[in-house]
Length: 250
Ligand code: 3PY
Ligand code: MG
Image 1: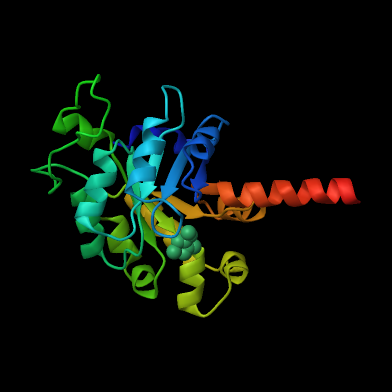
Image 2: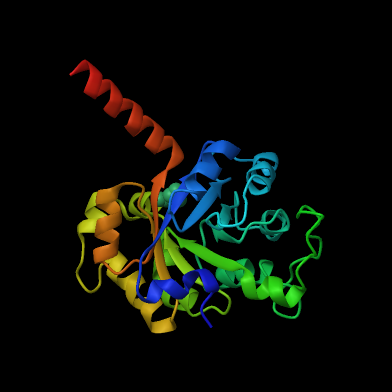
């Protein structure tokens, strides 16, 4: 059964907004612009436990679902993000099926996984979800962004509980000794991105990626990727400010 947020990937590409700035106002703005999901980045963005909780408390019904990238593939970090009310996680640096299984299990309660009970950070006025409901609603994306992850991508995509295989093109291109744009340009059958998209298709998992610019998002879409980080809050702010300066200074 596809995750509810992913049902639309059969026909549409889901576009996400990436929050680096640890600002509840910026995250809420992203969540109210027509983007399909928002992610709070604890690995490389400014987010910490406090800002994740503040951003999640600042959301309201109708906002795009909010995911968290924890700083590492760690069951405690994943559990804390979900306890705070994240709709799911995008787990960095997943380099083997074993690591994918650990991430997927950290997202679910026993018997499906090893998540510890304690969603106390959720709105006290709302009933806590049952463990079964929480397991059904959580989205688990694992990032393939290492040479080892690429080599094991078929087994990673086949791992029970993995909903999205999400490419980190910056780390992957560093590992492969290439550039993001060359990685994106390579569309031979055995090139990395087509290989990842094919593994996802074979196992009914959604291929996703960090694009951040419109041109890269279009290219990922051409290559079959359907869950795309289309922009970052920091990038939008810088682009908008540069554009305005150019408009007014000629
Ligand atoms: C990557 O491209 O490696 C990422 O993790 C994007 O943030
Ligand atoms: Mg990365």
